[in-house]
Length: 333
Ligand code: UT7
Image 1 (tube, protein in one colour):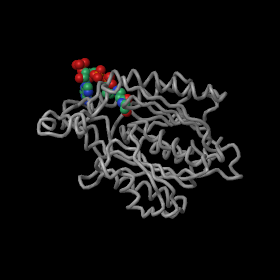
Image 2: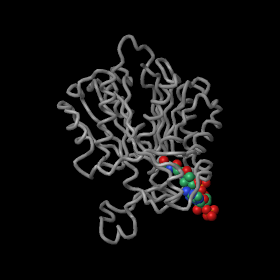
Image 3: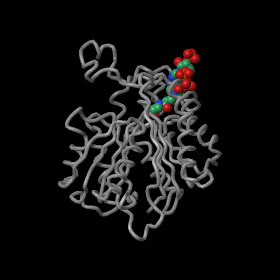
């Protein structure tokens, strides 16, 4: 049995200043603004400068979260970095962020779950805190998707952007009655792995002149397959986690979904019967930033007043793997 409840106490986000608009893509590939907006909802995405890597963006987001709460990095117990675009295979990006922050007492690791990464990360952190062994766990979702995109493939390059977001997870105090982490429901389904992947660069197909020439170090996606799976699982998982907690969609104050496609989010919200004002959509400004979409969306929900102390929030994602995760929280700050 958990010894304590866990709560999110701070949020920091970082998006690099460079922006690629749909008009910019019209000059790169055979596409147009109308197709991109109608089929995806994306208008622009942030792109990191060449000298910026995932650990740099992750560190910026982490510093913002720690500053918000006034926490000294030396007081962190653990750092989890959720990413599919680490600076390199090893050392882990968590080690790079730990060193950048000066988090001298922390352990940590990278977590690979693509677009579900952040939901898996905060759930793992909540369980470390609830076990009573950790008091301050930093979770960062960060991806530099622009480094693994083929800018000659119009079906993928227009979809993604670069960004990072970080949350701090701590034990609830006596003043937090009923607040904090409630439940998590997850699933992985490797039978769908070939529909969205980066084929080369690992032990199966190590880097070679041939793999580079065949552009196998880039995102490869069968969009319609992933779309169908996402629409089904975003709804089913959201409904199932609410059901098993005796809750209905009407009880939700805000749905914070992974931002892969506006149509996936709208379909999920409609099937749940949620009005648009309870659903966070910011894909128009950021595109799909993989592990960073959920903290970026949470940041927007806080800024617009839809997410505040006491709010019932459902964070839900579907991504490559396949990975699926839904995490239910009563917001505590
Ligand atoms: O976050 C990880 C999970 N990822 C997702 O959830 C992504 C899920 N998938 C999707 O969001 C959508 O499938 C896409 C946005 C990737 C594609 O939208 P779609 O409505 O499924 O389009 P499609 O792949 O069926 O392609 C329709 C047409 C094709 O042309 P033809 O064969 O009908 O002549 C494509 O070649 O649209 C064409 N097309 C484009 N046209 C203009 C594909 N990309 C573009 C483009 N601009 N950028």
